[in-house]
Length: 213
Image 1 (cartoon, helix red, strand yellow):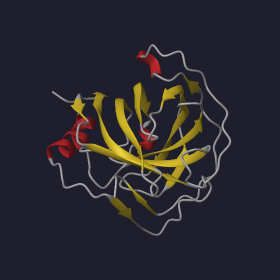
Image 2 (tube, helix red, strand yellow; image 1 turned 90 degrees about the horizontal axis):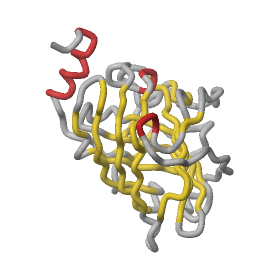
Image 3 (cartoon, one colour; image 1 turned 90 degrees about the vertical axis):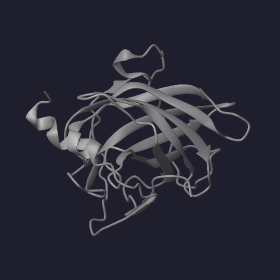
């Protein structure tokens, strides 16, 4: 029997709704002052085999996939359409590759804009292959979404995310997402989508895409 504290998440899984492709909310400007990062993990989380190491990136908001960027990633899942998980992703292009880091953003329960402070570990992925069109496949391995970054139930989530990342202009990247929720329950993330929008991390937008246009 699920623990009582898991009942809200289980209820949300049962009551799947229709998924919106754009979040258009609300009143909090969601400005983001960088917190001290809790730590840096390799590119696969605790269960991976990748030997990637953290990278230091220079950021810009030009939206050009060929330059270093800071992106707001919004991950829309069947767990609760309309309440995407959010993270800051830094990209640094190489020769036929891209280096990535991801750090989740804190969200109040039921919120898409507040407080959006960086929380938890930074996961780094070096040398991800990129094809001639700028598309790449991103497998995060097993990683943690901290409870503070979970606007659905507020619980820690262990996930494995596989994202197709396609350059789209505006947003900078988008695509379909697979993978699974590993803990506290097992649940497939098939049917999820993502969009990554070039941003100033100190002035995050209220309106942002969660899927390809």
